[in-house]
Amino acid sequence: MPTVADDNVVAEDLVMEQKVTLHYSEPLPPNFVRFGEGLLAGKFIGARCPSCGRVYVPDRGYCPLCAVMMSAADELEVDDKGVVASYTVITPVNYYGQTKTEPFVFASILLDDTTTVMRGQDITGIPTEQVHAGLRVAAVWLPPEERSLEGISARGGASLEGSVTSFAPTGEPDLSEDAYRGYEF
Image 1 (cartoon, one colour):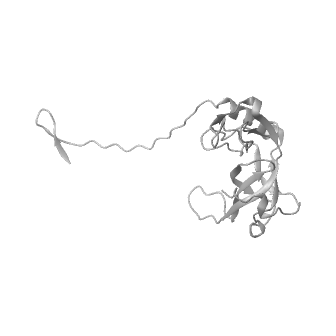
Image 2 (cartoon, rainbow, N blue to C red):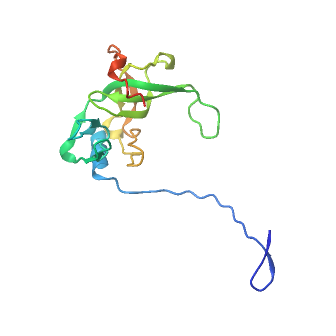
Image 3 (cartoon, rainbow, N blue to C red):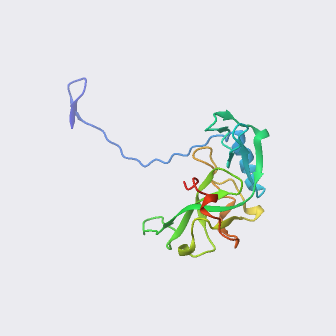
């Protein structure tokens, strides 16, 4: 749309199109640094709320239900085994950049003795049609020399992809629904 400039000369609006890539970098808070150090060492670090006793993995720095701050004194190591609380089978569609071609599972894992799920975890070692809620699973760790903190961020939870490749069945008996009811999401 033509516009009139200050000197009464008609000019065309200038429009420029440019693709831009932005990379954000921010320091991790101390609780996520300790969680990351745990991942590099092959263990999960959580924190127990001193008020209600809920165990959060990763440590959020506070209990959102009690509004109580947590510190390194509240941290503990938790087992790398748990239960599939809920899951979704994803069937990939062909699009540019898609690397997966076969159906795969993303699951919410409730680690033993914790009260929060780790969402979006890949399940391997079992056909997708055999994955089910109640399935006992354990973390599949990368070798120590290959572990990194790739993708770890305090925004939206901690990524495990640089240290844990997936969760796989343990062969232990399934847990009853009572063990994970209320933790599906």
